[in-house]
Image (cartoon, rainbow, N blue to C red; front, side, top):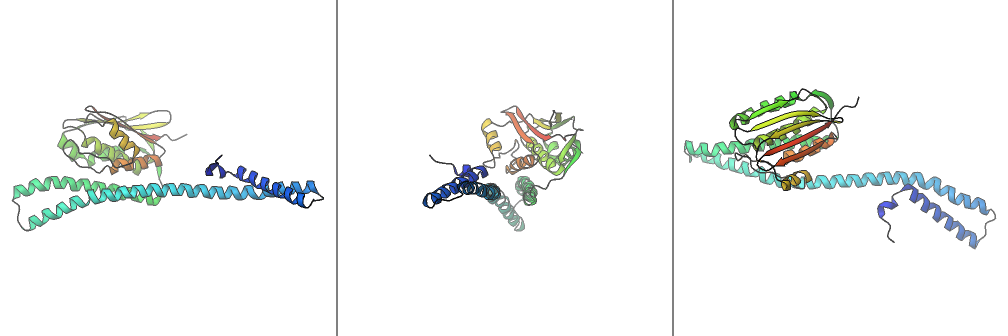
Length: 303
C-alpha cells in the first residue's frame, strides 16, 4: 500500500511514527538487555518523542507548505511571463516595425498625402491599442511587484465610471453609441485603482465589440453580500468556447472589434488578478449576435 507523500506532512502522523519507532527500539533494547524499570522506560520512550517531534514537525510542515505554495506561485508567474514575452514580441514589435517603415517612407517623400493618410490612420489605431496594452502591463507589473498591497476605501462607483466614459468619448462618438447609467451612485468598498482598471478594460471591450448605433448599459445591483457592477452591450457576443478561454486564462484571447479595432487580450486577463485580490468575482454571460453582459462583484463592507 502506497502512502501519499502529502499525508506524511502531518504533525500527528509524524509524532505517532516517532513514538512507534521509539517504543520499538526500547522493546528491542529491553529484549537484548532487560531493563529493571520497564514502566519508567516505556513511559519515557513515548513521552520524550511526543514532546520533541510534535512541535518540530509542526514548524517543518508549515515551512514545507509555504515552499510548495511559493513554488506554485513561481510556476504561475513563469507561465504568465512566457505568455507576456510571446505577446510582446508579436503585439509590440509589429506596430513599431510598421511605424518605422512608414516614417522612413515619409522622410524620403515616397508617399503621396492621401496614401500617407490611408496608412497613418489605421496605424494610429494600432499604436493607441499598443499604448493601452503597455499602460495595462505597467500597472499590472507594479501590482505584481507590490504583492498584496491594496488600499481599500469607500468610494462612489459613478466617479470612476464617469471618468472612464469621458476617457473613451471619442470612440463612443465614432460609433455613435448610447451609454446608459443606472444606480451608479452606490458606495463600493475596495481598491479604487483596481476597480477603475477592471471597469475601464471591460467598458473598452464593450465599445470595441459594439456595432455602430449600439447601446451600452452600466448599472449597479446590490445583493446581501456583494455589489455588482454590470456592463451590458448589444454587440457581437462571445461564444461559449471563447468564454472558456477567457475564464480559464490558459492563453491571452483576443479578436478584432466591429470596426477592426485590434487588441491583446491582456486587459481582461489581468482583470481576474485584480478581482481575485478583492475577493470578488467576474462572470460573463453572452449570446452570439445579441451581446454580452459582464458582472463584476465586489464584497460589501461588513458592518
